[in-house]
Image: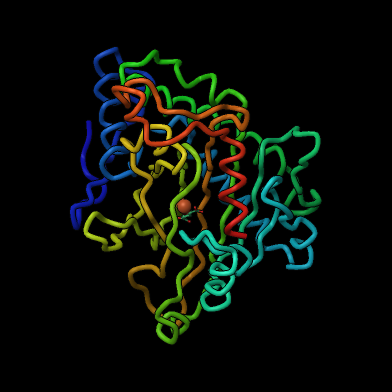
Length: 334
Ligand SMILES: O=C(O)CCC(=O)C(=O)O
Ligand SMILES: [Fe+2]
């Protein structure tokens, strides 16, 4: 069954029970798949409940992430993010500026004015010989860090495959149409920490945000957020609307490459993170979120999905390699 998680300013983000796709009969699967695709076509965002990843697992990953960010800065800097090609490692507050701007100098100016108040650790596919992940030393609280994160990576990879299967079912394609695009798992797990911040930081500087307005680049993003709030999605009227946390759900949004792949029948919608709606005291407490950026295999060639165009001239974009597209996009924001 479906209801609305967000409904404001013409933005309707559905809340969909994913278990009805994962475990349902053919009719339930079809109906759920259609709701998922419809959400991506209209809002670009959906909330899923009935998740294939248990609450215990999610809780453990959040707790382990918090332990990582408690490390001293000089320790975290040993794992520092290096290049867009690698896209792995630690980004200190102010390092990345999420934005729609693509000119490096424009991004630099923006970053100097309103640095994002966040830090993150990117974990790519493990086992790429030339692109190792940067792991913290496993001592004290961090014993088990790597296996916890790699296990979560695998589970999210499976969830990516299932969401893409739902899209295939809704588009009347073979259910496994996208499997050959998701099987490698060229995806990035990003642990995010928005540190506690004084409230007056936002009043003194009206442009200040926790994470700047942007769209994601890949196929879909699985976003797990804590209960603090602050995530906002841009509505069709141009207003940023709160995507309020709902316990035991995952926010899933379509990225730019899926929009392109779908010949713009699916939307990649702009979103950002600002201070939470309210709260007592002089500070906003820390916020944690975990984003899993899913991509078509880097070696895949991405051209309009069958059924999203009638004739060749309806195709809005040239074909492109997934990996080339993503590196090009990442190169602009760091
Ligand atoms: O932290 C969040 O809720 C959103 C993060 C996000 O949009 C991103 O990292 O792309
Ligand atoms: Fe995002």
